[in-house]
Structure formats: C-alpha cells, structure tokens
Image (cartoon, rainbow, N blue to C red; front, side, top):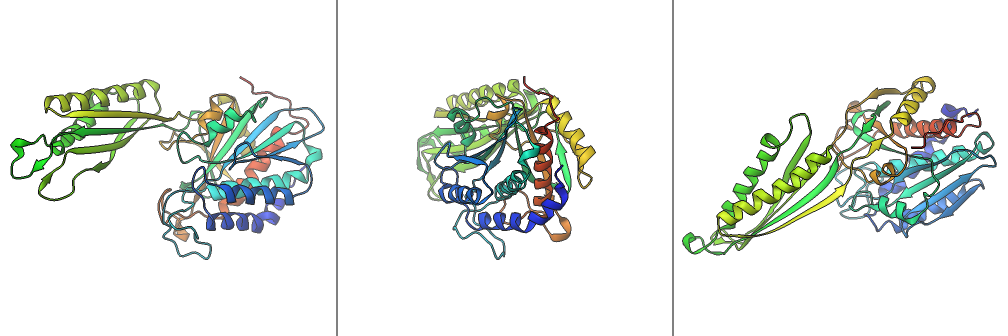
Amino acid sequence: MININEEVKAEFKTTVEYRRHLHQNPELSFKEFKTADFIERTLKSFEPGLKLSRPTPTSVMAILKTDISGPIIAIRADIDALPIEEDNNLSYKSKNPGVMHACGHDGHTAMLLSSIKILLKHKEDLKGEIRFIFQHAEELPPGGGIEIVKSGVLEGVDETYSMHLTSNFATGKLGICSGILTASTDGFEITIKGKGGHSSMPQQCIDPIPIAAQIILNIQTIVSRNTDPSKMLVISVCSIDSGTAYNIIPNNVTLTGSVRTFSKDSRTLAERRLKEISEGICMANGAQIEFKYNRGYDSVENNPKLTDFVEKLVINNFPGAKPFRMEPITPGEDFCYYSEKYPSFFMEIGARNEEKGIVFPHHNPKYLMDENALAVGVEYLVLLISSRCNKKQLKSFKK
C-alpha cells in the first residue's frame, strides 16, 4: 500500500518548483504552447509507463494503463492563465506582461504532475486505466473542455474527476458538494442605437444614455419580481461603453453583463426577460436595439454516488483534511462538459491562509495561494486514484 503522506512530503519541494515555473510563465487560453511543452517534457522525465498524446495543440494527455482490467478513470487539471497584470512582489512573479495565473491553475497542474510521479512508482498496486488530462482554455468560453470531449480521448471512460484550489476557505479544508456544484455562466450584450447630436439640443436627438439607464434599472426586476425566491439568479451589468466628449450626445451605448444561475428554468427566463425589457424600452423611446445572448458553461454536476464515495474515502483515510459539505457556488467551470457525459466529481481544495496574508480572491492582481495546499491536493489525488483503481475495488459508478 502506498505510504501517501511520506511520499507527498518527499515530493513537495518539486511540486512547488513545478507550480512556480508555471506561475512565472503563464499563457492565455488557447495559447498554452510552452505550458503544454513543459508538461510533456516533465512527463517524459518520469519513470517509464506513460503513453503521451496531444488531444489538441495546447493540451496534453498521459495514460497509465495497468496489466489488470478495471475501471477507466480520467483526472483533469486546467492549465491556462488570465489576462491580468500581476501585482505581487514574488521571486517567481509572472514574466509575461498582462498575463497571470490568478486562479490556481498553475497549482492544479503541479499537483497532477506530482501525483502521476508518485503513482508510477506503485503501478503494480493498481488495476484499470487512468487518463490524466492537462486541459487548455478553461477560462475562455466555449472552453477547452468541449474540445477534449469532442476529440474522443475520453471514449470508454467510466468516471471523471477534477479539483480546484480555492481562496474561499482555509488550507486543509476540502469542500464536497453533491449534485449541482457550479452556476451556468451566460453573457449578454445590448447595443442601444439612438441618434447623436449636440448636448445643448437634446430635442434633436434620441439620447441612448437615459435609455440605457432605464434598461439597467429595469433589469433588476428580473431577479426581484420575476424569479422564484427559492431559485438563485444573479444578473450583473458589468460594462457601459459610450461617448467621446462631455458635450456630445452619442449615437450608441453598449451594455454587457453576465447571468449566473443553478436552474435551467431561471436561465431561460433571464434570457427572455432581458430581451423583452431591452426591446420594449428602446421601442418606447424611438431607439433601435441589437441584443445578443451568449450561453456559456452549464453547471457542473457531481454524481451523488461518487460524492458519497469520495467523502467516506477522505474521512476514513485522510486524517490531515477537514472535509465538509458545501453549498453550490456561483463561479462557472467547463468541467461541465465532462460531467454531462460521465459520472463525475469535482473537489474544492482550500488554499487560504489569513496569517500569511493570503486572502485575495481569484481573478485579482494580488491573488496568491498557500503552497501548503499543494501537498493537500497531491495527497487527495493519490488517495483517490490509488483507492478507486485498487485491485480490490470492484464497485462501478456508471450511469
């Protein structure tokens, strides 16, 4: 049996080195060429036993196939960074201007690399097949997940797993949620087409500014007056683009925003009411409108049986962790493409440390992670895979 804790400790320095290299060399979604090359080189340096491939130009898959038939499982880590200028004083600060790992993907990749390295030493204790997916472009819808699924590399898989380091709770805590875990992530764009002119003669114009204000205010009634209070729905107008000078009424105003919900009915309602409200107000004011609604990621859904299995596994075999049942969360995830097709489970791994000042949220220029969480993540992954593919484990979670 694998002595997980001791092997994770022995590997920890290298895990941190992987993470810091990736943090210093971030790449944006669909452009992770050097990141994928680094992952592939690292995997080739491990003990023999892996079959490597590139499902897409910037993703990497490693297959560990044992000599004994058993479950076929896939573990996915995302590898892309964000268009953010880092504001941290680190020896391994991002070297790429305007690009930063501000969401923990560098940590996810490092944890999976170290987990593979440990598992390869114990291949004789395992059965079945493990497919390790280093996936590109999680941050940019339609996302890399849909390309991985369409590539066919998951054909025959029984279960899929993934994880996310989170600044929402402390290192050592593992957040477990059954059923719906993440929100769907849609976006909208409303362009109000008026008639510009001189600010001193508004009667000659169709001013899109007050029309936009009416739309923004009335959008709020979708949540407060059209939605069942028991169903979560968040609609946010996040940008307003218009105007060139203080004394010019502009021709157009463009509003963009996001819609987050756990409910398919609320999602459909939001799209319909956004269009109705915007079109109605524009018509009443004599303006034209261009309305776009872009459906993003669906919700990630954790298989209840897998959730129960993982929870019991962690409680009984991971004394250093503090698992707890959490509520669904509003961020989105393109792991939804996996969970739609296969029994799946997605773990939230705490990486917050207030004593160290590691408190900033994801997608913030000052985002940091507690690197001790990397050890927690590696131990969890090795425990999960070695238990799920143990020679004595026979239970299937196929739908």
